[in-house]
Length: 90
Image (cartoon, rainbow, N blue to C red; front, top):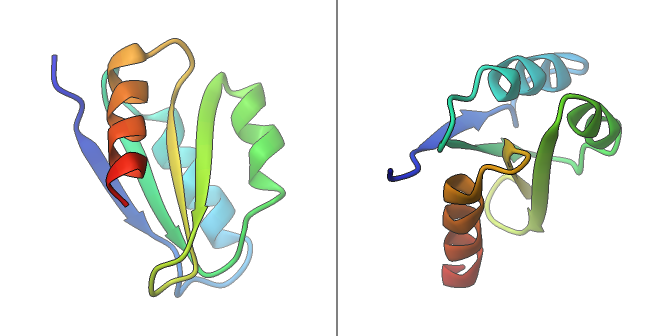
């Protein structure tokens, strides 16, 4: 199975909409896929909510919008491997 990236750009949204949209998209992730969120700030309030939902993440600073947050399901090795490959390529 090949993981597919799902892109969500919340960099232009007003608070609390980025948090809500990110959680909604992350919870709907099918197995094998990961979510790449573009955000203008580091979303510290999001991290404990992702953990409670059984999701993992990596945050990367940089790029035009400021931050990228890569999110995948806990124990989804296909998605986790794709996230590692993406980060290694950056």
